[in-house]
Amino acid sequence: MTNERNWRQAMKAAIRDPDELCRLVGLDDRWREPARRAASQFPVFAPLEFLARVAPGDPFDPLLRQILPLDAETLETAGFSRDPVGDGLARREAGLLQKYAGRALLITTGACAIHCRYCFRRHYPYEETPRSLEAWAPALERLAADPSIEEVLLSGGDPLTLVDEQLAALAGELAAIPHLRRLRLHTRLPIVIPQRVDDALIGWLRSTRLAPIMVIHANHPAEIDSAVADSLGKLVDAGIPVLNQAVLLRGVNDNVETLAELSRRLVNLRVLPYYLHQLDRVAGAAHFEVSASLGQTLVKELETRLPGYAVPKYVQEIPGAASKTRIL
Ligand SMILES: *Cc1c(COP(=O)(O)O)cnc(C)c1O
Ligand code: SF4
Image 1: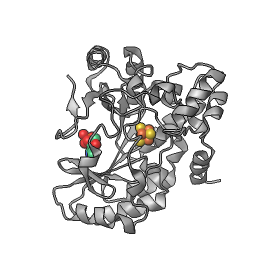
Image 2: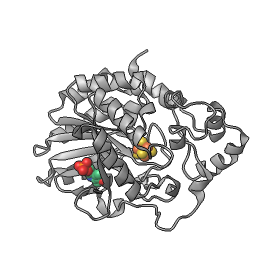
Image 3: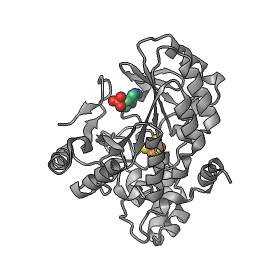
Image 4: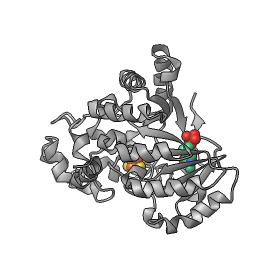
């Protein structure tokens, strides 16, 4: 059995039924009805590989919190909207967003390997995302016509839910645009289904002319088990810079011990903490919000405990701003 079949099988075997999720993690019946209600707005998707890291029977487990639908998601909260980061205004072509100088983002797919309940794109209109290389032509033409762009980000959704043949073909089209220099992948797959990091992936990442950079997404040290550590090691050994972004989440990582341990775990694996994001105010995620003043206190405390390179930049996305905005 090849690795590729393994990760695709893992995607197929992922839990999509809220009742089954509750049962597998040992939650009693009280949790099922609310889970079903909230899942009707944003479905459950949780691979067994990730569920194996959840402590059974604990509804407050910080990994489970990220995937368990709760009634709180169905409440409307003032200030929380369907497009909190201004993706609509940043659209340049179907699947192409640009907000910042020199870099543009491709929404490569709407699919993810996990559904994070706090996701800022939980309401994104993925229907228009191109599904074939031909359908990418307008976005690619737009990139080719703009020599100011030197970096393309593959995002989504999660680009690594696409198979390597598709990704390598897209990377080939991008590499043919002379002014592009770097290809960045934003993905949670090495964390969620670590066997996704296989020879085929490393192969095309190493062979493209573009300098590859990978930005992974882990919020809690318990997400990084030994299989994840091995996969991150493969990427770093292949010469691919790996950075982590996390979201500051109530009930998940809103304390200094957890954030410090996450950073330690990452840097020990040669992965650098990049951003700690203030939650984007997306409808359905208000219960995850941590105040910016608590966030500042936590990050200042991190600075007293860790080397400078292990402290992520604490940032917020303000629609229309020229970069992510530091919260200092
Ligand atoms: C966040 C984001 C980026 C990346 O910003 P960096 O500061 O370079 O990590 C690029 N494009 C869009 C549309 C983004 O939302
Ligand atoms: S993996 Fe990323 S894009 Fe997908 S649901 Fe989680 S936060 Fe959202």
